[in-house]
Length: 351
Image (tube, rainbow, N blue to C red; front, side):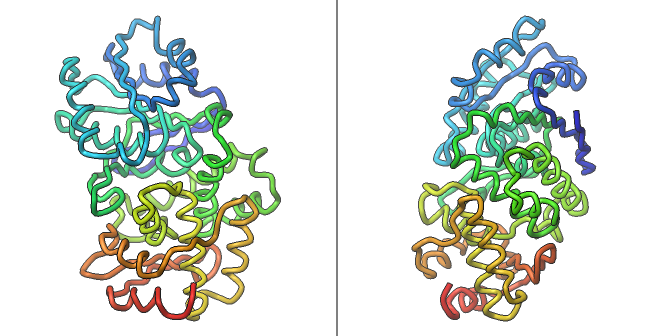
């Protein structure tokens, strides 16, 4: 089993191994003395893996409380948090009990936020079941819900007590969800890790998915530990996300997050290359990588819609957008633009 320490303020371990899910009860038992385990599970995941979940968590002397949620972006709201809290209160759950989150990135954002605010903090363990959540939501402690103003506009930093990653869950992912995760893997490769891009270009990504997961988490960990609260260099992890989140909001979250990020990386790099910020041919190389795994690199949406839906972006500070651009592969930069400058950035030329 590979174990990565988060090395952040709230230090926790990330366990990576095929069939690590079977060992989850052993990991939990080392983190708490409670006999109460609250399982908050993506409803679809539970329907598929009910037998596995039941086998692992039952007959171990624990009292299990199960709460299932349809993990959709339109459920990522205050109302869902309130309903989770009601379930916890109704079952007399205390702060020394533990929550186990089983699902994708949407669920980990919801459960992390609910855990952080229940009685000012209850432990939770994250068991991510999608490729996207394994390489992205597993590190960094970001939690949150969506509002009418945009994606993840209300939330906090709250780390799990452990993350258990098992590629076993990837066996039931459809191609859309698999590509969704590949987008974030490509992103971390572009900004930080050449060996990830080499594996993608050699078309060995499915065979080497566990290695890609490990490399992606390690790269993200190394960035996050230098800036746990996302006020400096950690922002480079937002490459493609300003436009990506804008697209998600504009399209009412009907586009997968990874697809939106792939388009966002492509669009912003094409623009920055035209403006002389990015070296020539970097854009062409980037979209070749994105296309090679079947991800989109453009979409029919007006620049005006992208701009308008960017105005509540979390990365705006002092009325300035902090855009993440690349000079070259593994050479990201943070550029600050006023709203007027950002508007000109988008509208100058054609994307």
